[in-house]
Length: 319
Image (cartoon, rainbow, N blue to C red; front, side):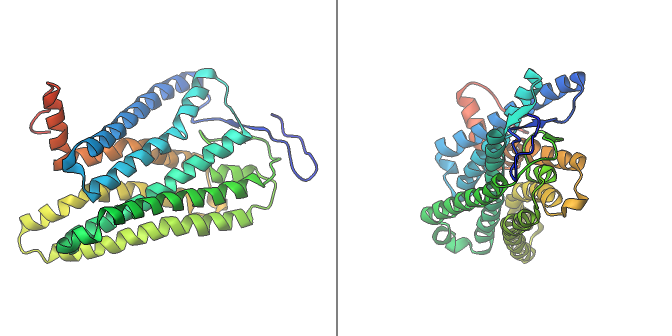
């Protein structure tokens, strides 16, 4: 796919994804590492989905949203990692323009949905801690379903906006992406169209999703902190706050890398830094979410222990 200038528009029909390395020995190591991480992330998230759907003890709003988060994480990591692994195996690093756009569409969709679900989960913790008596009313099944549906709809709409704007750009500065998937910033750098409008929309529309979730999360946690501080005993404070620790950990990891990657000007953009941040975001976070939620969480551990007990496998009591 050597780009030929075709009038106003160009005929870059494919892009080359250089991935994280171009040295065969390193590629082999990366292939092994990412295959392992991907499989563990898949299994962890599928396990959470199964536990949440099969065990009635986990049929509560918090776990309903956790199930959504696991679905999103499966999609999120699957939108980029399998293609990267296939490229390492085949040695062919090309991706068609349509493949590139669809990869970007799914990646941004799941990223946006994850942001919003994390915001909703913060609201759920806020209601549970600050309005425990009205929790059943505020977080009824209908409300939870609506909140989750809204997160999915907004995430998909956000992505459709970015993808359609990307699809009208023309590309003539070569077709090599120093990245392991088709992401917005590196594509902007290859475009010979004026991308200022696109960049503005990325920051405004994408930023609205990130910042509304982040703001909602911060406001929820300020209220939670105030409620926790009013509890007289240290045990009471720790017990109440412990229901939030897993969510807080995931939120910090996720929003930290997103803010670093997307919400800074194109001029300060470095593909090396960006790749490191996106590996954290797309590969490591989906792996850590089920781990953080399973190990920091009594209910999930109990359900796991019972399930394993029924299968004749023992989970150590201290775990």
